[in-house]
Length: 421
Image 1 (cartoon, rainbow, N blue to C red):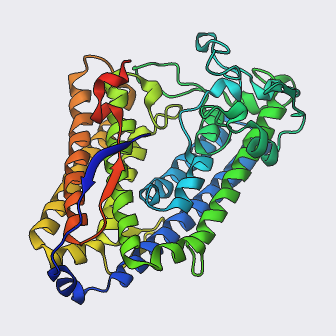
Image 2 (cartoon, one colour):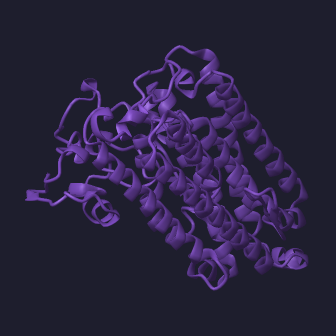
Image 3 (cartoon, rainbow, N blue to C red):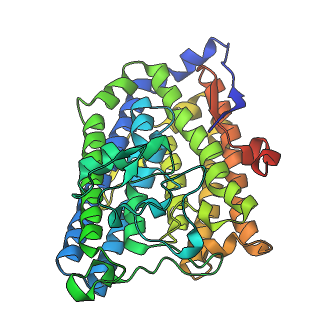
């Protein structure tokens, strides 16, 4: 992803410091870190619940245990997506994030795929490797011992194998594929439909290698839990990520706003929403196997809202809140605070319409279909809202007297012709 030229300039007025005296900037950063700690702790807890559901599926494969594991996966996405606003401005998060949420992935590297998927390509010789069916694969010219599928094998050898980013072997989306399988419905309604018998043992096993498939699912889920344990610890009291964002107040505020603006603009409005609509391609969905994209989009937006308002609702219903970025902005420029608050609410309403429509049967896949005016209108309302709120986030940077920021960009927004080249 490239950097766009969209910037926010530094304010020169010395009055800013005096006006901000009422709200302690350090306290705002403490709230920011407290929300991160709570959201990552919730992400860890729900991943552990997913781990338990996966263990139950493997121990006793059935339609019911597969359904439970899928439900646990969806529940785990709710708190995690609200942490994505901590990317971009926090290097510790950005360097780590690819371990748990990388996409898109060439799923044929992991398991069997439909014949329409094709095989190896010039860009990726491992695109249809099917490691689950291949205990001794050839990777980068060397034979690899994959007779035992372990977290270390996935993390150290398979993930981004041969240096190719789409060889995603770990994280939420690898687990998603193992629970749902491919979504072969195109722009029609319907998610992946992997049978529970893909985990049955003995003569009831379908599509072969059910024991290795279970080993892979178990190892990938264990790896997700350990990765989230790492990040939860980094934001807990005494954690390195908390220390990094709170030790320099202005740099910390810049990190907050970088995350808000970059997720709003290039990442969500561009790469996750506008690009898929331009291509009319359900493969560009963020949660393409489960058809859960509408929920992930909603909670990405909610994470931005949380950071601005200094408020997060935990999975148990309790709230974490405190002095907020909104308080600082309201003191400097009350009209700007009202403007950004209104724009965030507008975006959340648009994302809520996408979510509700999908839950009512108008799947996100269907919204992406060429010529579907209703779907395009729903998606573009959210895209426009995200872009519009980014303009106000730029103004916040200026009004708080912070260093200029180059937010993440997307060809789909900055150079649309390049998308088709």
